[in-house]
Image 1 (cartoon, each protein chain N blue to C red):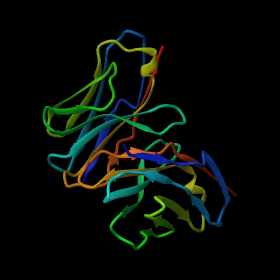
Image 2: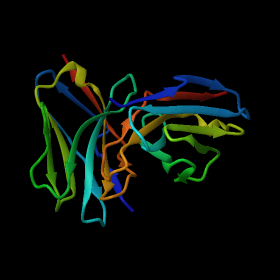
Image 3: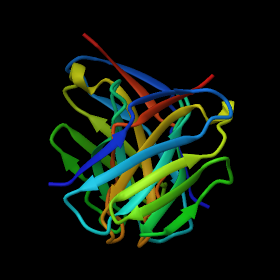
Image 4: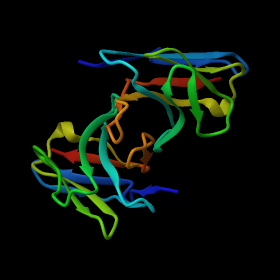
Length: 113
Length: 114
């Protein structure tokens, strides 16, 4: 069966520091991968999605970037964090075939001080 | 652009009772998929139920069922025999046919009263 791992679960970072959140999927090949941000009490905002290695689409202009160095690895990064980057970040995967549900990781709570 | 609206920020129900969560959406697509996700306090997003827009029959998963009204662009979730473990944020989401991007509503926080 497929599993998705996302880490760390919690992260506290100072303003201006770099960021690297990692997500890996097991049990499937060539999945679609997604990064979402969820502000407190709000819905999910799609940040990036990827249909293949080095194929990244950005949905919202921001201080963050994403990379997919391997088929089942998706990384969310920032060179300099802003206070507004605080939130709950969720990674998800889905099968390539259209209209498949997305399956989510456990999320990372990021607090910027 | 597609939009999903959940007009009930919070709902509560007595244990063992039935509750319905509302969701409306807007899209110019003729074919699409709709989902309900559950996010308990642990924050993990869990797929509850899925509906294909081309199907007239409402989807059902055990105690969870939907009322899909395509003309009205409405997709409500009914939870029967509510249990304490059903307490969570519930998100409605839709995705156009053939696409992978989902648009989520703002969520409804469901409280189960014992």
